[in-house]
Image (tube, rainbow, N blue to C red):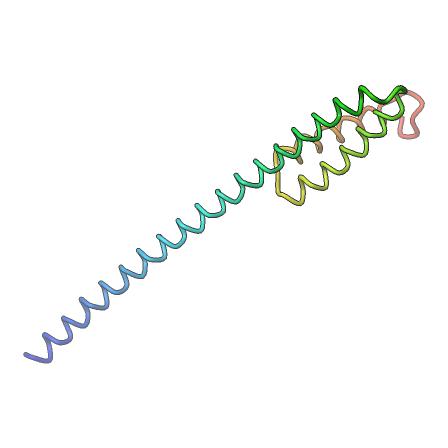
Amino acid sequence: MVHDEQDDTSAVLGKISHQLERSEDASLANLIQNLEAERDARREERFIFILIIIILLDVVFFSVLDSWTGPLSLIVLQTILLLVLARRMGIEEFQMLIDKLVGRITEAIQNRPGSPSS
């Protein structure tokens, strides 16, 4: 009889221990998820800050530059740098926007009369 009570107690303690492990696993998974969300939010904030600074600097540079080639080359260079930065920081929205833009440009080039694929 004492042996049966010890077995029952061991079984109950085993169940409680298992439930606590599940609870801890769920809490840990929730904390990891919250941490990733916070990191993503901070990366997006940094990217937006950098983008705003670039726009403000463009206003200054475009008012100083006389020809159209300077601002055009500056925009191309900045777009390339922003693409690299967006991929590095994991900004998915910007990547999707650029992918759509590049897709439309390539379609326009391929569908142009006189293009090799026509």
